[in-house]
Image (spheres, rainbow, N blue to C red):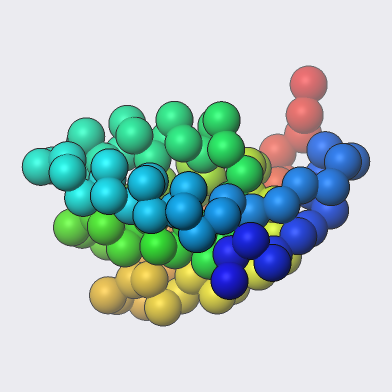
Length: 116
C-alpha cells in the first residue's frame, strides 16, 4: 500500500514512499525502544535519510506513548514528507484534537517565516 504512493516533493524530483518491508523494519525498531526519547532519535534519523508519506509518518507516530511526542515528531518530519498536502490526515493520530491544532499552528508559523 505505501509503495504505491508517489508524490512530487518540493525538492523537484519525484520520490516514492517506503515499501511495506521498509516500514515494518522501521516500526519494529521503534517498538523496541523503551521510551519515546529513543523512538524519537530513531524516527528522526529515518525521516532524514528515508522517503516517507503521511501514511508512513502516521504509523511511526502511533508508536509514541504521548500526544506531545507525536506532535513534536510530526512537526519535525513535515519538511521531509513527500506528500505534505495530506498532513490533514494526521488528525486521527492524536488522542486530543488540541495537539493536532498545535501541529497545524506550528506548520503555519514555519511557513510564514521568511527564509534567509
